[in-house]
Image (cartoon, rainbow, N blue to C red; front, side, top):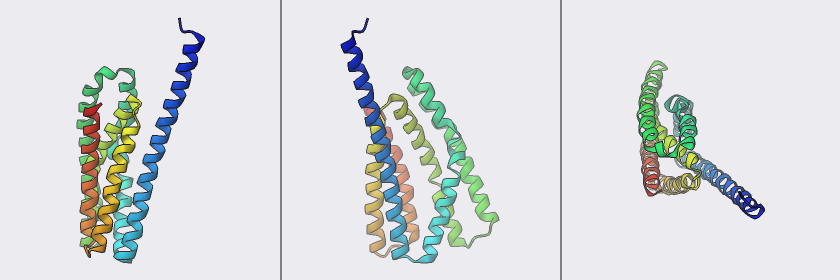
Length: 206
């Protein structure tokens, strides 16, 4: 039977862990928002209004189709792994396969929508290339679900901090070096891929 001292210790430890996880989530969200702000500010300053509008449109579509790419699988994975951590590998594989299918469907539908609305060719290409990031984005959310189930949210913050530093630094270098919007789009796509790789590596480490 737990003594009053041990119960107090466990309670304090739980509160500390809760606070640490909450801080990790806050830090992760903050770095994402800072990176997005810097990106928008740089495009508006260095490229001009048309390119700013193209990027804004492409990212709006990207964010709008995220729900289809993930299809609610993230919450399911978090709940099931939290119940039985020994089944992490099984859920991770099945979830990755499932969201890959939904992400590819979202990419196809977004491509069809862009064609249907008859945007200018260069705008359509921006939308299509940005939409390719839906696949690594969906896979990344599955690793987030695993970290949440493990109560290791700081891994999410580590990965996002690293990738957002790459996004900010890369964006500054590209735009101040005279590169255009498509180079920036390629950087954003690479950042999504890097996010998955970093989170995969952290999951292997744990």
